[in-house]
Every structure is written in C-alpha cells, then in structure tokens.
Length: 173
Image (cartoon, rainbow, N blue to C red; front, side):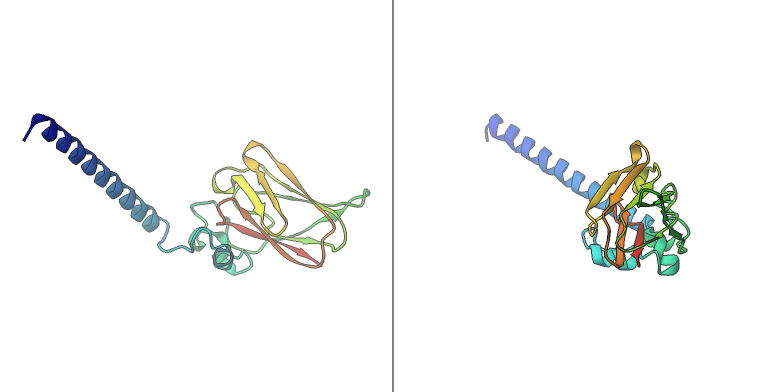
C-alpha cells in the first residue's frame, strides 16, 4: 500500500469520525432541550395543534411552554380580557403588555370598526407577534409596535408570539 493511499484513508476516516461526533452532539442536545422543556411538544409547524395545546382561554395550559409559562414568560395562563376604546377619530384602540405574556390575552373589539392594537416592547420568545389569520407580523424587540386592523367581521381571531408558543385572541362582536 502506498503512502498516498494511507494518507487519503486517514483523512476520510477523520472526516467520518468528526461527522459522527457532530451528529451525536446534535441529537444529545436536542434530547436535553426536549427533556428540559417538559417533554413532547406539538410539531413546530403544526399551527392548529399548537394553538389547541396553548390556547389562552383554556386555563393553565394557555401560558405556553407546556402550561408552566416558564420558558417564554408566557404569563399565568389565566384569561385576561381587555376591551378597546373608541376614540373620537372613529378608531378603536387598545394596548397590550407583551413583556411576560399577553396582557390582555383576549382583546374585545367591535365589529365593523377599524382598530389599532399597540404591543409593548418585548424580547425572547415574545419578541415577535403575529397572526396568520389577520396577516401581520411585528418585531417587538426594537420597541412598541402598533398593528392597524381594518373593520373586521364578527368572529374570533388568534395571534401568537413568533415561536407560536404563547397565544392571544381577538374577539370581534
């Protein structure tokens, strides 16, 4: 066997060992993170399952992160309702504190009237707020943001943190 073949074989073996170590480290860290967060969670991209599991109107399960609220500062899990006020300019407005969960996490709006919801500055999991149903996404890490909504039809619309772990509802009546 030539020296050149031995060197090539050693190089390949080294890369295989490195790849195996990286794979073991990745899976070990995943298992550790999963165990630390309380075990099985719904699939990240399964919006409906995640929404059902962390619905803010479902008591303690609504705080996100397995119902304890710890990893995201998801709040107590209690339903906190807040109603928008109608200003002289014909727009209903409400502010939401997003620093430790959404307060209020159930927002009451009147149907057929434009609205503005101002979310406070927040970080970590709560650093973004979004709604697939209402087509908004705001980064709250750079300061408070106001979401302008058109006049909505009666119904219930959801919003969540960017990681879809902490949820709130907009109830239009």
